[in-house]
Amino acid sequence: MKHFSWPKTLFVCSMLFFLEVQIGWSWGFWGHKRINRIACFTLPEEMLPLFKESLEFLTEHAVDPDKRRYGVDGEAPRHYIDIDHYGEYPFENVPRNWDSAVAVLTEDTLMAYGIVPWHVARMTGWLTKAFESGDKTRILRTAADLGHYIADAHVPLHTTLNYNGQLTGQHGIHGLWESRIPELIGEDYDYFVEKAQYIENPLEEIWDIVLASYLRVDSVLDLEKYITAELPSDLKHSFEQRGETTIKVYSSEFSSEYNRAMRDMVERRMRQAIIGVGSFWMTAWVNAGQPDLRSLENHAQPEEEEELEKKFKADKIKGRYHGNTGSEAIQQ
Image (cartoon, rainbow, N blue to C red; front, side, top):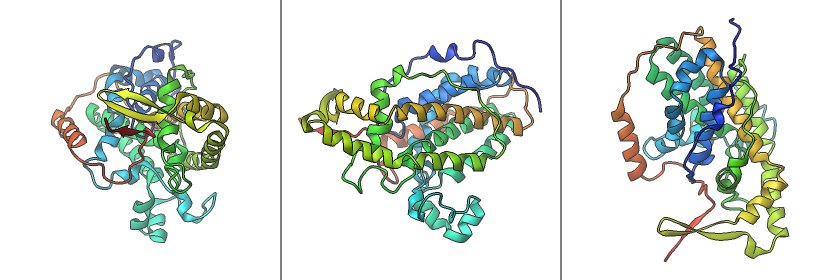
């Protein structure tokens, strides 16, 4: 294997970007875009000719998997796994291999409770094939999508049946954790992260990520209850104007106190997601034989993007809805 080199100014460029704040999705559109964007700067120099040149593409298309939830049946389970459906940690009764899991649990059951670890492993193989093909568009689309699912696996509430606090009277906590908090303070996060590392076993690695996320579920839920009990009830929510609509949201005071109670868990998981995305991208490239990325053919298919946007704007979401902003519209 080659020795990789990282530019001395690796992380300087990663601070020079501007993203619009959007909310309502896993990690929020804002969060997914930022994770993919900064992950590009964790890569070795040999990968930067393609990934730096395509920074805007990888940023903007980081949210395509969420948009597909409006037009593609079977998309939703790729974003999560309700691992506690199967028993207790460390869930040794759940085979890590897909074929074995289907044999033991049935594919219908797996699809009903989420398949994110298996889908990440599968997509890592697809990205390797894309690198081997030399098809620039295929590489970038697959990398952007893979980054999204890896980021989702870092979210504790993507690993539990109680994904939006609906089982414990905490409806809206999903959006509070992964959208509201980053929206309020994400600009102040420390994005100076480690370099990408080669992953010997991608399937084992993504399962480790999922289990690490699950171990944080109790803290996510219990600390929200604690802050709710500690603060006056009139400080939990506030109202903000979004265009012509008045939105009820978690207040900045409540969100900040909750974030402090969690000891910046959201920031830490985002940083780990950035490293994870870069590492899976790099692993797929190494497994493809480290092809030269300096001059690849572009097989763009803009009609696919147009169709995705149409479905996103016109259709209803397929599968579970998290209400990720933790907000609701107030009738005028």
